[in-house]
Image (cartoon, rainbow, N blue to C red):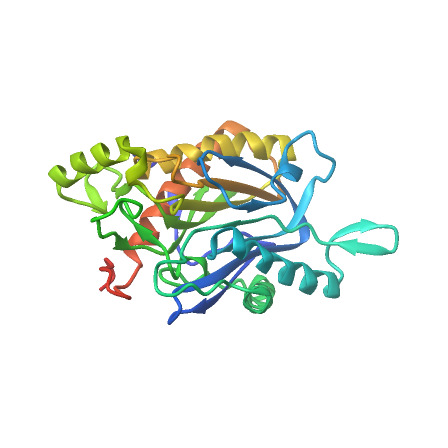
Length: 320
């Protein structure tokens, strides 16, 4: 059930989103920038995350704001791409002030896409391209492209880790909901082990055959039959409501409900599921209301990620 109005063609003021994609290699980078800084925290539920600077986002840590978040392919090897974003922001003078120096705070998280098309790892040059696009899009308020672009270029959904199972193509999705003057958006890369389901519980993408589903759980029960961590869903939630880092942490924990509404099974040991929440604005809002909005918009963006994915590299996508 959806409680809030989903709106299209809008971005949250102060934020910009950009992608860099290598379609042939099946990998890429997506960057969310807030050059003036946004209060931010995160919640990580998966058993195998590939992340950077997430410790800094915990409420007890000193730094309150971040200046960009990087999502990429390449698993842990892709984390180096975020240094390219930090370089761009530093050159532009955006970051945490330390005397005369500027240190951009750039958390990051990656999906595993190394065995999708090629073993290419997104590098700093790709991240720089995505960051430059994000900065430009922040000025022009361009709505991000979705589907098999950026960090979603090599994303798949549906028991990818289990031998003998062919996943469906997924990608990166985007959604915005509104309640009064408060807006909440989510950008989500879906590379989940589990299937994706519609709001009414019907199957949307992944492994549709019930018998194969049961067999998949049997194989999951045999730990030696599973590959190492090869799945992850990553989401960046943005809002124009004003919150502290501690409140962003609460919203992030509730936003994970959106994962559970759209993906099953979710938060497995073979997933690196992570959610970031960024707050930039002056609108006062109740943290529970925005938490509820966040869960809804995350679920919407997950479904958009599979609905907008095209068929490529031998995998079927719902967008044809």
